[in-house]
Length: 263
Image (cartoon, rainbow, N blue to C red; front, side, top):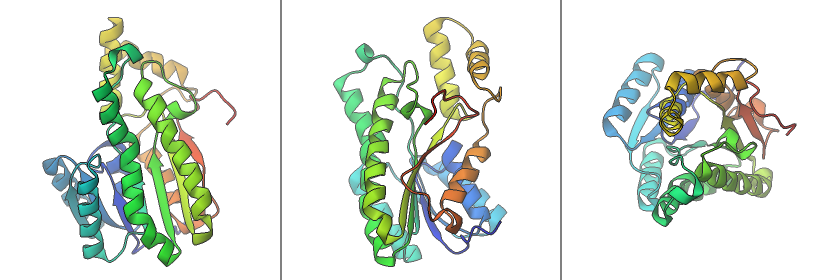
């Protein structure tokens, strides 16, 4: 299937590891040029070099924290100066800490709001005007299965990723007539560093092993295993494509069937 993405430009946040890296690699394989962001410069440059070597596309490394609006503005400006435009925005960030309500301080809440919610707003504010002007754009938000079925112990993620969903649905309705689609992808339990950290935290909290935690998760997934980042990334590439031009305002789970609800 020709996704019609060759020569497009994507800004991928938190793209040096995990789901962000998998999305960047999938887009690059389709011929997409990349403005690649992450906080850690060493890992970011290593990922850039791997993608350039494998796919031969132009990749601009943009180290910076998406929770900092000034840093976001500077990165977007650098990307536009380098490529001339941004056609695809993938918002993504490290997940907020796990914990029940009583364990989370006001400062922890504020940091999570800045990273999980306001980073999406800042990135969209900087990139959307150009998309509307060109009457073509794709905004893809990496959220979580927690927006459809809250996960025990993830108070911050359950709350703030749901806020991103409300933002995205409203924005999708506002931008549809400009040829800009806005969608959310909801990763389930996927083999990433984030899930490794969550399994460790759960094991410590319940005084069991990480292996037991993962086995329990897998028993709750109809497919019977954790997902792989590339399986998630395949949907992101499709939603970025010409073929997905009639899909907007959607929240699509890649979870092996874990969510029990109908919607």
